[in-house]
Length: 275
Image: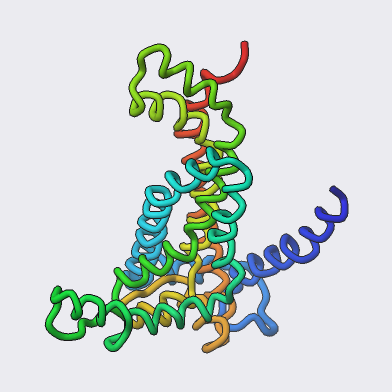
């Protein structure tokens, strides 16, 4: 593990530590700055605009996580229970979207959801709408596109953990007169919790830091902290404030995942250990 740990330390931990140090600079520039100050964090928490955008960012991430869970769990479970030769093609269909550039995916959605796009044309053809509707540049469009982008992570996470669950356990539950719903709740969900939490963690971190999709699909109506960090660092060159916002976002993501681990995983898995 030494090479991986050295690479992680050199290219992630040390740069992250440098950015954290920059967030404590008192001024609006990191060039020649010295000392330590909480001015950047006070500026963030003292502005209602930044707090509202932060709340909206977290709400986006939570909705995307729930959407991916509802849509991804049945697919992941189904893939895990398919024979290997049938699973390969279906897995390929899940993985292929991950090989596409994010920009290509977003521009594809711009074409689909545009006023003259495929979705509007289909709705008009069926008579559901009489004229093209504005399907872009709103919060719903951002959520839909983010769910499509991150759904494979939930499917693969659930599939990997369900493949390790012996189907005999489900058969045993059925033989004890448990309904399918009770078997799902009492057997499948607790044993699948590690995969569910892994998928939720990945999706939440990626959704809460999304930048390209909200900018191109949501427009000015969908504000997320990722765009603010980009503007502060690359547009106004205010590295200290941008670094402070980045670490506030990091703390929220890490804290939420730690809380979920403490409140969900441990109670569900406490009774599964062999004593």
